Image (cartoon, rainbow, N blue to C red; front, side, top):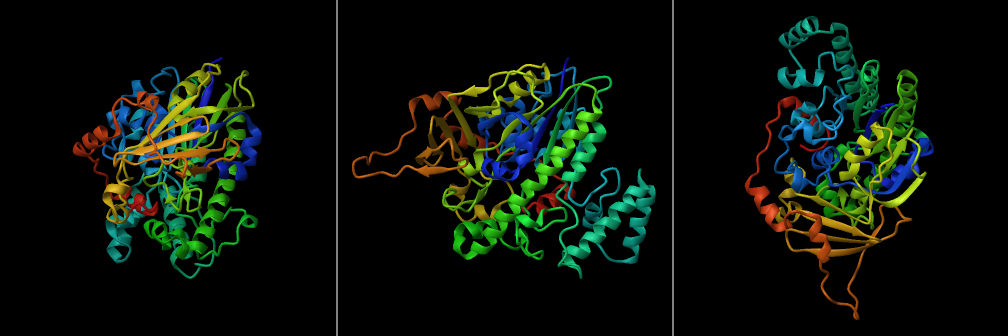
Length: 477
């Protein structure tokens, strides 16, 4: 029987923290691919690679071209499953309607942090358009609530937004944040849409709770951290952390603690969601759990980097990949390399009840440039932060090179997730690192040529104030 398949993207969740903080999903998995690597370093190119099975320089969706409408659905995994109804629910602006990602799906729902009922009025969008004060503003708000498709949900959105505002900026600031970063809403909206009565479905979910901003949130397991409720990542700039990590040592400790706690929260929520969906669907439903990329956390292994800007570190690329309710045929643990650009083949095979071999001895990854809306970082050193970076994996060696001529070789350890060590030159071995000849065969064009062409043809999609506000909430603006 044809299966339903749900691809769950735990945005920004790196492999080592998943292993430590997601025991429920790991226990439920029938197969875990221990050496999965993202195809790119941030959301837009990574999502495009997951859906197309191609690298960013091949599918063309990246820093200099963010518009998913350039993709043809037929050239994605959704086009490979014409008999499946496609449903997408995403809390990620870059993987949402603002950038045309919704056009790939039959049914798509955008979710934002303070818009708890997507069918109702969005209070954040209203405030950005009309402001917060004044009689006319309140009258306009009441008119829009009355005229909305779901007045009660609109009213609930406004009330919940105001309640949370009292926590974030008012007299209740020592309370935990009332609402998560959309996980509850994403899972609720997905469950409503996952109907396989007439046709099987292919579902995609993006959950942003692993992504900054981080702060203590209602529903978190307080035994996993001792972070003050008044602390938030919104109080500091990523570029400042990279420039002087020692000055932010306490903040980094808090960040890591809440990052792990957020992964635990997602683990609990997604596990219960899987149980509900399996109980409510007629067909077998298989769940593929992964992350679009990970995160540098300012550690020595991360080389002091923070966030996921301009980096192909193991903290950024080594991500979880496990399958819950897989067809028979996979080993419980798969230790060979798997790249996200094989997810298309994996999902399509699972939908047919198959267990395709998507492993490889050597795999590549690349990022074309700096994530947009990071002007403060870009201005510190434009050539460095906006360089194009590539890497290849072969055994326990990773070679990294970039459009500025840099080449580095790293030693890896398959038993240590997200670990890498830059190979230093010694007195007996001082030759300059080089890119292996075979590595160039994994790419269609060299890194310098592609970066020049992409930069010269830079064309950005214009987004509305609502999308810009959501990007601001995520720390991009």
